Length: 178
Image (cartoon, rainbow, N blue to C red; front, side):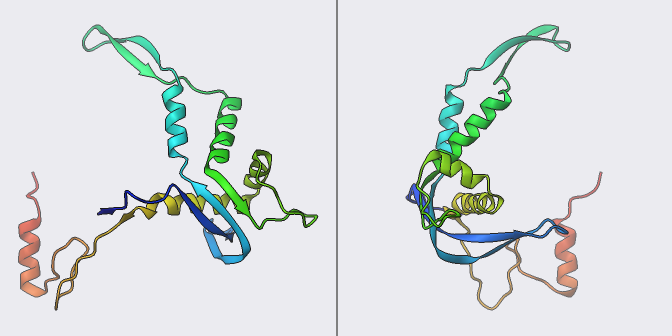
């Protein structure tokens, strides 16, 4: 595994549309169209900071095996308005800038919190946002590919064997059943 620890905090994505197949539930992403773009950053630091500010509830719970009291710590459940507020603040934090979007009256949409939330209410934009966040999460990690000359390598890293050699290798790698 190769980790890119110097990747930029923000990334700019050209806006692309998507379609949802109602029969299979599969999302198909289309190529970028037009000059619309969105600049995003990872929302992980935001949620880590919010979690650090939340207070844990500590309870003493009876353990029947030890016949003693165990300490149980947990974060209390948030109310529906608190969940909605945290989600909206997370979107506002993650979407840092955008451009090239126009409303129904052909006016350019300004970068404000209410406009970001209105755009996230649109299913096509929400799928775009989700896909971009997924791309950002996976962008810092790449598999290091090994090349073996004159042989076909298996995903497990072993070489492909044929005939009697394959049978013998398979017998040696299997664990005996108990």
